Image 1 (cartoon, rainbow, N blue to C red):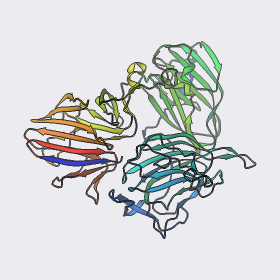
Image 2: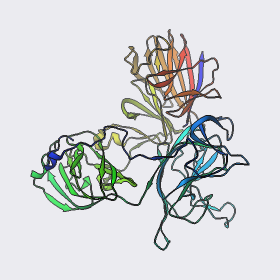
Image 3: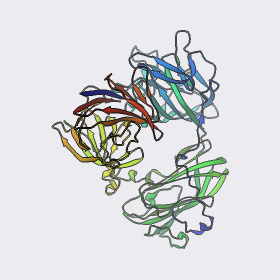
Image 4: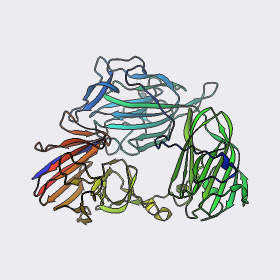
Length: 628
């Protein structure tokens, strides 16, 4: 018997300096508080936009028929902004607010074959397009910075200065895609002459940085006006095709930045994990500086304490967020005589401290102590954000270990004429997995598999694996990093002998006495065949790339008696769509069953929806494809 279905992816210890009596831990207890809040655009009505035509509407949800061009189905309610244009209603939508420098985040859904655009200041377009199957993206593809236009040029030569995304990170039509964009408006002098071009500092699509520091010499094609200004609204294109948006939020920024004054750095020879009373030590040198950098430590492979003291110049009164990160070192961050981040003796990799503190405009006392205890490792960073002040680095680039000479070169693993495998640790949903194997193929369709739980962890296309952290700093992290746009799966055991449909799914392989062999066989093509046991069942699992599509084909053979269940997916919600497929919204992929006799079960467990398939006793085969 064969069961066939398709998964379609859319893709410091105590402070001992003289300020001890002032010690006050201000590190946020909420791990989610890492930045100041965004301003949300209200999507219960169109009140945050200027009047437009009826193609724009507020709805409760949207779905896409992937087999049809430019079809967007809506569900009653609110929270989603939908554009469904026709010949009589197809105007653009413009925000009621103007912006200069802005950080914008939004979720976008593109129907099959559809086209739209986000125009910053009505003039500079980030393209929205169904680019799922595109191999080599252009400026006209999803996330591209669209061309400027000169109609006086010869036909076919009118477009110029467009910027294609670095890679195609677009998901399949019908899935929510996340954009994060930092835009800087052009600047003008008192006479109105432009002194600085507009710029897209960063454009992120689905977690991938696709543009960085792109300067715009003028408005792109389709903008309302060619003349550039310092303030103007955000515009969404309405006449090219249906599109939907949700979770629209933004921050408006001034040109102000945090800075330092009267800063001095003292350097001490010291070798201990715990920071002493630094004021009792004798420095080996003292210098004036306007720079914070771990690389100011004198000597190679030394242990040092660097003590920075001066004034923090606060541009405006309000709440500020500081992010102080250390690489296997101790440290203290003291602002306005309060110890706001305490990482003394916290001798771990990438120790981080987030502080939220209210400050008054002017100069406040500032002190940063860096304990470079490990002679082999160097690096700290400090970021700051305030009211109307963009989050930015307060440290010098040289403070990061990756910017030291010889370290910035990446160590890449790439396949040649057949697939390659690489064992490593791998981060999955914030947790380090220690028994992973990643498989890279000549087709550039790659995946990572957890040999401990017997589960597929991630799939991605493009370059294979960045192994730098397996070698840098003596390979302490041992991490392999997937390169490109990766999709994550649930990562728990995929097969279980449940007593009933209501039984809780095991989170580890030991909960029900499962016996998973940490074994696999390599085929002539380099693709592994994973082999493990589940009670009396033998499970063989092979995952191969498609030769002509961005797709993984998974073949699972099961031999032995007994009914077992296969956990296909889990997510915040799983819904069956009108076309018979299922959408898993937290990881944004479809599950499309091709076998009509199959009876998938959606159930709620531990606050998540799970999609399960019951596999009968005897010899069985489960076949499905993963497309993203």
